[in-house]
Image (cartoon, rainbow, N blue to C red; front, side):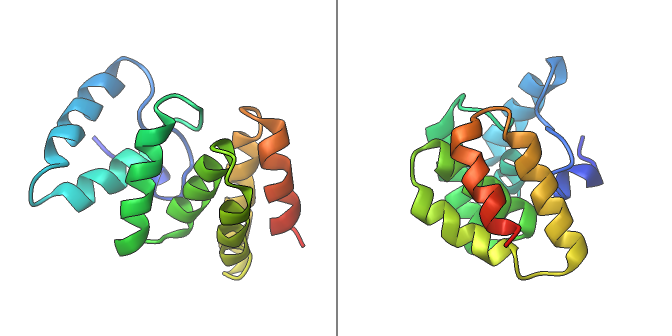
Length: 131
């Protein structure tokens, strides 16, 4: 059901016909003992768009507390920017600019893919991370 490309934000895990079933399964797990893991995968797999933005913000906020990986931090920053919370998004982008060169490249690539959703909201984040 999951793949390693989802960990790095290499693609949307929840796209297409299979997505609905995966999201239902993970959503059901989101209330029990496995909730943190289910929310991690839901956040990683959430499409980079405005659909269900409030839910994506809730998932990413909770996941940031227990697994603030670059992929999660980048997605959280993207969702915050779409929500008009540029200052918060910018502070997260500053965190992404510090890791290894490879992690930085992955973060920039994630933001560049996401830029097609809202150029005005994401362009400042890309400029900030490249400083």
